[in-house]
Amino acid sequence: MPSNTDWARSIATTIVDHIRGAESEILRNRRLGAMLVNKGRVQYNKSGRGFDWRVKYRTHTVSGNTGETPRTFTRINRHEVAELEYRGYQLTDAIFKKEKLENRGEPAIVELGETFVADMIESLDEAFAEEYYIDGEGSGNSLRMHGIESMMGTNGTVTITSGAQRSANAADIFGYPNSTYANLSCTLGSFGGAQKSGIWPNGTANAQYDFWTPIIVNYTSTGLPGSAATWASQGIEAMREGIIQCQRNAGLAGQMDMILLDRALYKEALNQLDDKERVIVTKTNGLKSFGFTNVFELDGVECSWEYGIPQTSNSNPVGYGFNVDNMELRSMQDQLFNSEMEYDIDSQADKFVTDFLGNLKYRSPRNFCKFMPHADM
Image (tube, rainbow, N blue to C red; front, side, top):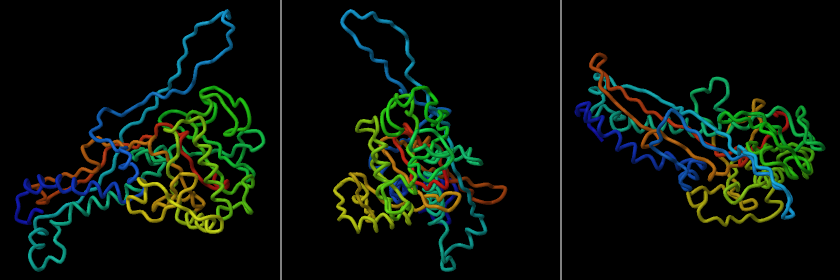
C-alpha cells in the first residue's frame, strides 16, 4: 500500500491493483453472486449505449398433409427485441492534506491510507448485493439496475377455475403478472396466442401467450395442499409448484437451479422438512462448494436464504426462484467496481470515487419465480 508521503500520482496508479485483488471476494460473499461467478455469468468490458437481444416468441404453425394438400406460404415474424440501458452506482470520499499529515505514525489509530479504497469497495459491495432484487422500473429507480423485481409486478391473481385475471383472491395459486421488463410486457397474451387447454400455467398454451411471463406463487393460497394457508404449513408445496411451473415448455437451459428465501421463510421451510424427510444435498458444484452451509435440496434445486431479500409493502417475507444460466451481470468496465483518485490542488484533497456501470440481464422472465402472499398481489 502507498505511504502517506507518496505523491498523489503514485497513489492513483496502485489503486486498480488493490481492487483487482478484492474482485473475487466482492462477487462471492453472497449466494447469488457466487452462483453467477461459478457459472461464468459475469461479463466485463461491455460497450454501446445499451444492449438488446432477440427473443423468439412464437413457433411456426403446423398443419396436416396428405402429400397432396395445397400449401400457403406467408412470412412470419417470430422475434421481439428486448432492450436495456446501462445504469450504475457511485460513492465518493476525500482525504485532505492536513488530515493525511495528522494521520501518521503512532497517533494514527487507523491508518487511512491503508484502508481507504477497501472501505469504499466494502460500502458499495454491501449496497450492491441488495440491488439484485430491486425493481429497476419502480418510482425513483431510473438510475438503478434491473433487479428481479423488475419483472414481478402483479395486478391480482389468476382465477383458479378459469385462468382470468381478478382482484387478489386467497383461493388462487398464482399472481397475475403485469410488469414491463426490457420494454416488453409480461402480461399474458400481450403478443397474441391463447391458452389451448387447461388453466394457466397448467395445461398448454401457444408459445407467444406466456413467453415473457414469470411465475408468481401465492404461498397463502387455499388451493395448495397444506394443512393451513400459510408458508409454515405449505412452503414446500409452494416451492415445488414454482419449480415445476418454471420448467414449462423449457429444455435443460430453462431449469430453475436455485431458490433464495427470506430468512424467516427458510427457517419455516426447514421446520416443514424436519417433519417429512431427511434432506441430502447431492450437488458438488453448488452453494455448498462455496462454503455456504445453510442449504437444502428440493427436487434437485438448491434452496437457501440471502441477506437483503426485500419484504413486501405490508412487511411480508418473500422468496425467489432463479435460473442462473439465464442471467448475466454486465459491467462496462474491466472489473465490477472501479476506483479512481485525483489530487485537487485548490481544495488540497485527494478525491476518491468508486463506481459500477452496467446492468443485470434476465434472458426471459418465464424462467424465474417469486413466492409471496396473495395479500400483496
